[in-house]
Image (cartoon, rainbow, N blue to C red; front, side):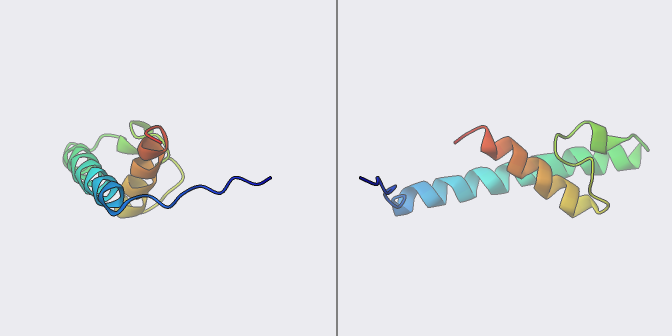
Length: 70
């Protein structure tokens, strides 16, 4: 017998999108501030170590953060 996961209600997907946008914005601000003072911000954000671009590194760290939520 296989148990299939039920699709998330529409409200849950909006909540996850809101968490993603909020987390992305906050971590992007941290990365931008660190760039302004020439700090190695990639070591601060988990999952961002292997990415070369700012947005790619922040996105990877948000996905790493969000994996702990589910």
